Image 1 (spheres, rainbow, N blue to C red):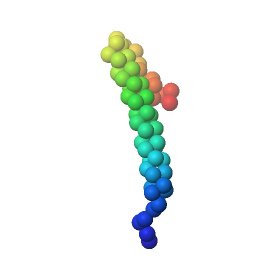
Image 2: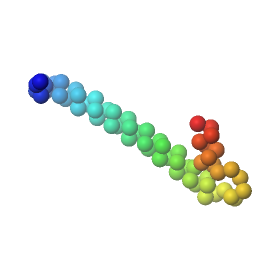
Image 3: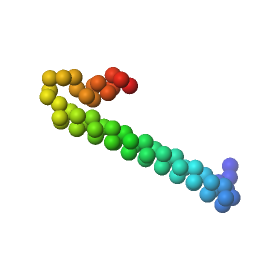
Length: 60
């Protein structure tokens, strides 16, 4: 088994991996924003209604 790849192939592999990482980071930012909004809704709630986080999970 060889561990040598031509530089162009190595770069292409690294670029694909970078694109995957960037997509995962973008997905995490969206999840962070949504979860932050749900936490704020919990903070603003009166405690008598269903929890906004539970409501969101039920809708999923």
